[in-house]
Image (cartoon, rainbow, N blue to C red; front, side, top):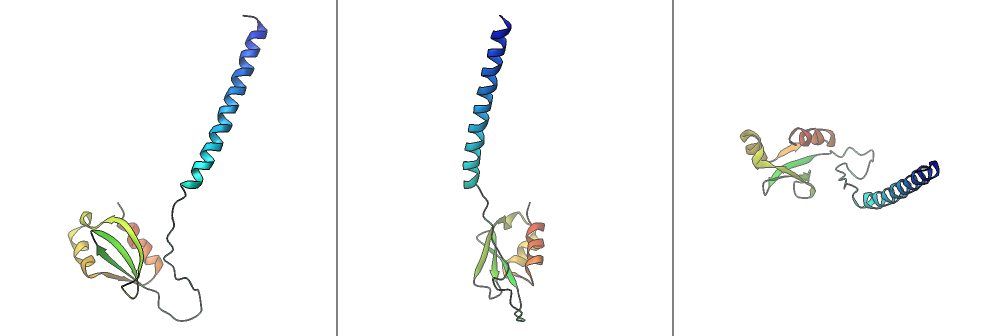
Length: 115
């Protein structure tokens, strides 16, 4: 093959590669917008200066850990943490519920029990 043929093949290859790259980036960007993770905010909505006590109840519901507001009835978050996989002592405590004072301690508790 002549030198011209090699250059032509190289140019066609580069153009094809760039086209495939641009199409891949466009598709990946569109699909990535649909895959954003859902974030659950367990912090109080109002940051007023009142002395309202923040608190959460963590309980077992259908073999999953569920987080309730301090009233013990309003669900704040449902986790995918399976209670039956936790140690026996933790399972017994979760039957009655654990009261956690603030969001920071709640996150630490949930992180410690995530496998």
